[in-house]
Length: 147
Image 1 (cartoon, rainbow, N blue to C red):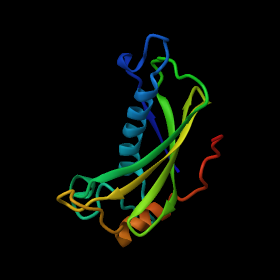
Image 2: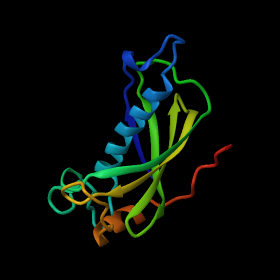
Image 3: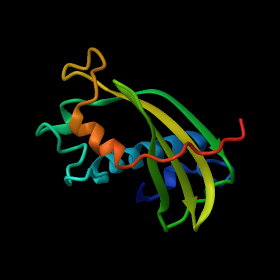
């Protein structure tokens, strides 16, 4: 599991005074980038350092997302905390699970399906041995969702 803090922005809030549901997905995106940078395999390698260029050369493509909101997120100067981990790894795809907490209260949980793309972004490619080692180091159970 990787934990990271993501600051909130004034523009994330809506007329109801809470962070908008679409803004939550943008926060998830920021946390996912931090996951790729911080997740380490047994040898210390990260997903952003593999093959020299990492994700810049072989970007990740989102195949689907599922999100469940538990309570509103309010604008605060204290960053929200994300926990992210891997729940499934296939030949070319994998699933990240996450939870978002504000002041230790669980606000949202979700999953995101991903594939790494070829350098030209034209098609998915298989997960390399080194990438699999990093992903394997962060495997956990899928979050419990109500729906």
